[in-house]
Length: 110
Ligand SMILES: [Zn+2]
Ligand SMILES: [Zn+2]
Image: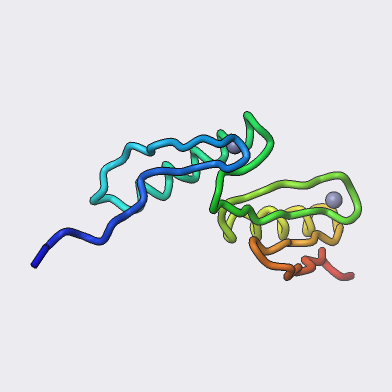
């Protein structure tokens, strides 16, 4: 009988780079772990142009201007899309991660 907590994955790998990294964080603080992964993924994307394995961004893509941004959470992605749509009256396509689903965020209709 074991009281070990379920295994969490403190490593992140990238098949494109063929590398694996250990994320050092306190295992008893899952939120810090998620932040560490998020930070790592954003840094990795900044340096290499792609995300590590298992990380899929939300993509907010304006259909009227070249304004595109990627987010690792729905809330910031949706906030960006609605803010841009409201300020510019552009329609922004919000692409769901790991899905073909696309939501259209419209600006104010007058
Ligand atoms: Zn990589
Ligand atoms: Zn726009």
